[in-house]
Length: 77
Length: 235
Image 1 (tube, each protein chain N blue to C red):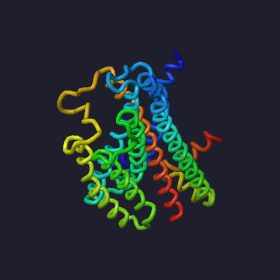
Image 2 (tube, each protein chain N blue to C red; image 1 turned 60 degrees about the horizontal axis):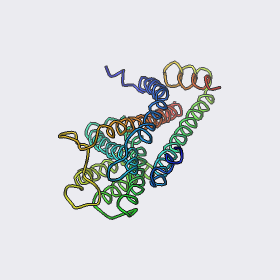
Image 3 (cartoon, helix red, strand yellow; image 1 turned 135 degrees about the vertical axis):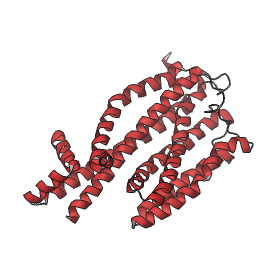
Image 4 (cartoon, rainbow over the protein chains, first blue to last red; image 1 turned 60 degrees about the vertical axis):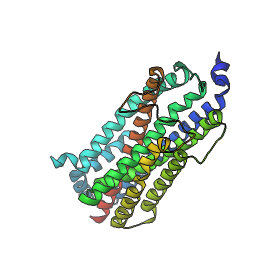
């Protein structure tokens, strides 16, 4: 039964290749996008660290995005 | 009302949506694959080769849909100068390119067992390759040009010119004699696909749409962070 499922009446090669190409490509794009997102989050935090305490507080008070990135970094750490 | 469209609120919404998609994606993927590879019946003519349809058709639809959205937003951005549309387009274009390439590759893999050839320069296939090149040119404008105004102008022109190709893709199977079969699913009028095949196709379309939405949200989130980082530098 399993071999029938794999062979798919002789079309297995084309079917499995199609599904594999789709899922490998999608997985590659997903991990590349995630890596870029994490890289930018870290660069943003590094930029924040270069500020003085006053400037940092001002940025955090005015920007929900900065607060969220900081909160996410604490969650992941 | 406009405060709801601030980058902070959009960012919070994006985070919630990413969490939501992550929580349901794998369940829908498993259901889709079970239907596509096990439960759906083989075609009376094509046999099991028809299962390639469950990845080929949604990929082609999303490839076309992404370019339609890009064209619409490019025109709106050109007229109303809404900066968010620029970032939305920048985030959508790679997704459209990915799915267009996947539609071409899976179409080729479907063509070999059904038509007896990997490739033929027929109208539908050629117009999909043209769409792929429009995506490449569109993405290159963001990579090669530096000034945002120039990018908006050039990318809008590419999108508008490329949109001429969209009806050609859609009606190529009716206007010319092609190897590619005519559309089995019609929004207006009766579809010729059996419900037992339509259901897996719709579930796989949902899987692909969720994936596309996830990548778009992640890319858009990256753009927001990039802008915020620039703003810190300016201050």
